[in-house]
Length: 486
Image (cartoon, rainbow, N blue to C red; front, side, top):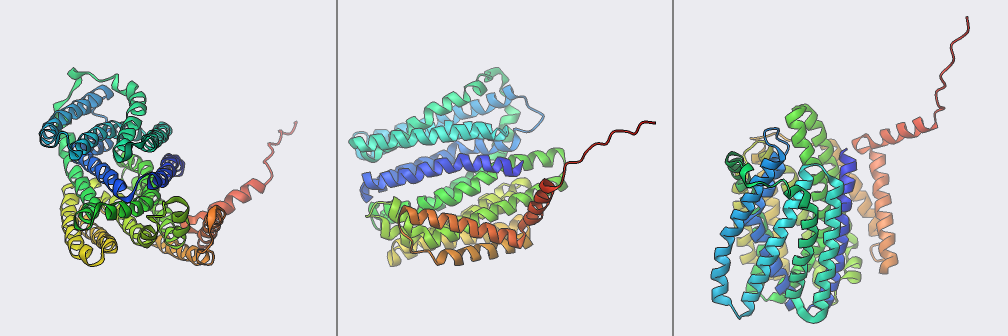
């Protein structure tokens, strides 16, 4: 089930990631670095706001949907009331901000960012409900349709001359319609009288610490962009964001897809089959997480320049190539923390521990950015990012073990590292290949060489499974003999 669902979720993430790559290419050709800086700051602020006020409901829903104590109507009604309450609360600061900035560019940015936040909230809860119900096919369909819609509408409005704000409005429209259609049957069960205050309190108690951690994570991820804009200019923030988005679309796409496939099942196994069965599944999840993320980072670091030349506007290329190895490694470290180490706090029901670690990471990131950006510019921001994410992974590793001991497949991890290094050595020989033909060659050789190393090293006993399968397929079919006549 893990492999099957992971493949579905990877497809669900891969197609939007490809759309995001295409969007990145379009936007960097349609927008100047200054305009792209405005777009990325508004978009980042919308994500930060969403994570700050809405995302706790998603996280708690993922954790408690499988509980046998609540029926669908009660759960849906309770999270629906929660969303309406958050929406009403968020209108107050919006009105105050618009009062001061109405008629100014900042007012337009705030209003468009708020609209994006609301539509993103609807999209994310729809995704969460489908994932919690372990419906990967519907999740994939929603995500793919939404990615195509947001890309088409955003690019169209940018092409028509509406610039960065046009992209934001296009994204908002692209999130809205597919989410309404996909969630209609679920929200039909909404009934205000079915609201359960005890469930609401349980969701709030569990979700708020995780949401606070997500806020800190998003703050840490976005600090460098805003500090670059403040200490340098919006063009520097725009170019940095392109490098960040290019890496994130590849690495986080893979890691989040595997987590989406595995985490609901792990929760269900813990509640129904016990710790031992859940741990066996968790170990497979960890191997898959490492086996796909580590070679992606190495591949991007070695041959990513060809991808940059093909996809990114010329004004951004030199900076993005410089950033790619740094940001790729930083996002791998962040992914390991979020999708592996932090699960110890979640499964150990001590989610406030993630918040405490997040505070230290955020402070370290701000301090390092403030020190390094004036000295080294964009590269200083990248060094600050990788250092703070490494710090966070180490803290989560050390303190998470006190609350829940996670299984770690050390031998397979060593094999994966060796296989990834071997793949990197092979890729190094063709790192200067250019054009789409060169990119296809690099992808084929990289994947085939990595697969060969994985089989040779027998990661997760994969070679044994292949041999058994081939042996079984070659063996003659058994023939049932007729009984002898007396």
